[in-house]
Length: 74
Image (cartoon, rainbow, N blue to C red; front, side):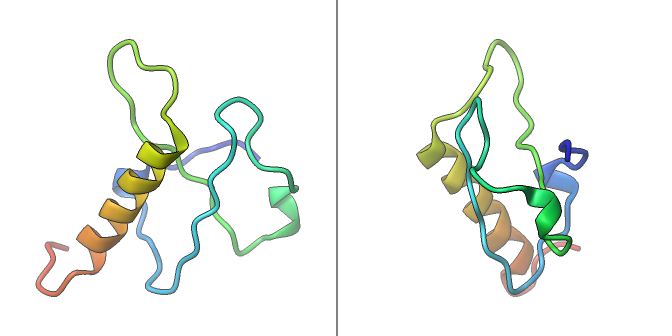
């Protein structure tokens, strides 16, 4: 399953879990076995090819909070 969604435009469900994989190999399970799961990409600009997993996790959690905070922009 390829990534066809960008984190910044994907609506994260209120009840979400985040699984972050290796920058080259991804995760160790077949995502197709979990039809309720979605794969998203973090947009990167410039010469950056990948992100440290801690940085990626921080960005994902920030986006989750941004979307679900009270009085958030739609």
